Amino acid sequence: MRDPALIKAMFSGVSEKVGSRNAMTTKRPAPATWLGATNNITQQFLAAGGRPDVVSLAGGLPAAELYPIAEIEQATKRALERHGSAALEYGAVEGFPPLRALIAERFSAETGGRFTASNVLLTSGSMQALDLIGKVLIDPGDLIVAQAPTYLGALDAWRPRRPSYEPLDWNKPDVALMAKAKFVYSVPNYSNPTGVLVPEARRVALLDAVAKAGTWLVEDDPYLTMQLDGPPPPSILSAAARRGGRPYDGPVIYLGTVSKSLVPGLRVGWTLAEPDMIQKLVLAKQATDLSGSMFAQAVAFELLDRKVDVVHSAGIVPAYRERRDALCSEAARHLSDWFEWEVPPGGMFVWMRSKGNAIDTDELYRFAMEEKVAFVPSSVFDFTGKDRHAMRVNFTRSAPETIREGVRRLGRAIEAYVSSRPQLARR
Ligand SMILES: Cc1ncc(COP(=O)(O)O)c(C=O)c1O
Image 1: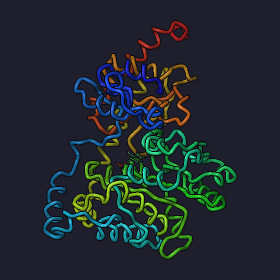
Image 2 (image 1 turned 90 degrees about the horizontal axis):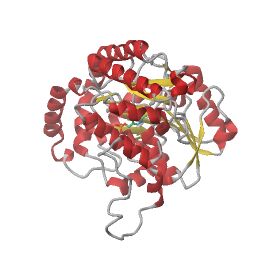
Image 3 (image 1 turned 60 degrees about the horizontal axis):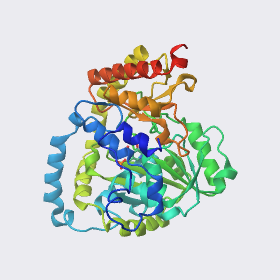
Image 4 (image 1 turned 180 degrees about the vertical axis):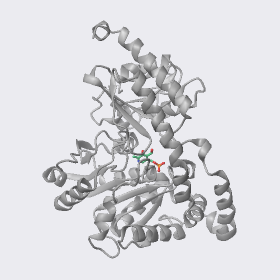
């Protein structure tokens, strides 16, 4: 979905061409060239999601009514009582020291590796870590080997650096290709957008290939706790950590976050990497925001210290499982003539592919807006922009009945799309 006119038509009233404001009235310097290659789709999906008349199956948001508000209130009080002004100042660029130490302890215990605070950087969500990795590693034209389809936010974060991309083949990682890459980008747990869970043997094979290629491996793991059908295999980080290094000195740069295990509004994430890489990321972070919010990090510390994230995320899994099942069973009724999918074992999304590539999901979006339902078309997750035959459908944000209604609307949108194309209607 790269065509601004099409985007505008889809979101009449909410869309604007990026960088074009004032262009007609005032002559001012042109924005940097990368802005011409980007789009404001994320903002638009958030806007569509906020419209009360639209059932949004688009965003990647948790269920707001399940947020642990009372626990966060208590943690905020404790953070101020225990940490006082330390929680209210500019802090270390690396992050709030007690939380860094806690993350290092947790990952050492969970992986059997040896992490110290020198391996940990706290960021404003894992999104900031993606941005910092781009700043530290990518010069224009540099290669990223990325799991495809690719998380839209990662593509957004790296676009200003103007990288080139090749797809990651999990079945047969290409060492020669990786040797040319600055890093490999992967989301092995319930990927965004596909919900795919990568088996252990493939994780280990990728780590071996990355080690041979002598490059970095970014393991982006926001959905770890969204385990709907049992626990996932160990992280690639844990395999790397067990291979040596005290403190950890492996090629995996691991990104975690409280956004799905607690709430996205805290904007607290962590990066685990070998100490020199952490220092480089710290240099980039210093120029980005001086320091993260010590307040948010102190609150996150109080929550993680009492394992509120672990208890909370286990508690919400049944609700998410029910929503996934509601989506998939209703979709089987209304969408299966035209789309196919696998039931994801976790995460937040079902990836629906048009059978025989019959339906162009950029085009379908127009019809979906008419029916007042939103999804995310596949083109925005494709670094070439060419895949227009799948869609990402979210099941976490809305209650089961709303999800079912959204699917029925999607079914009507498909009917309208198909009848507008006689060659399909005859199929
Ligand atoms: C794969 C992936 N990485 C990173 C993020 C960013 O998460 P946050 O910045 O909220 O930690 C998301 C958000 O949905 C995601 O899906």
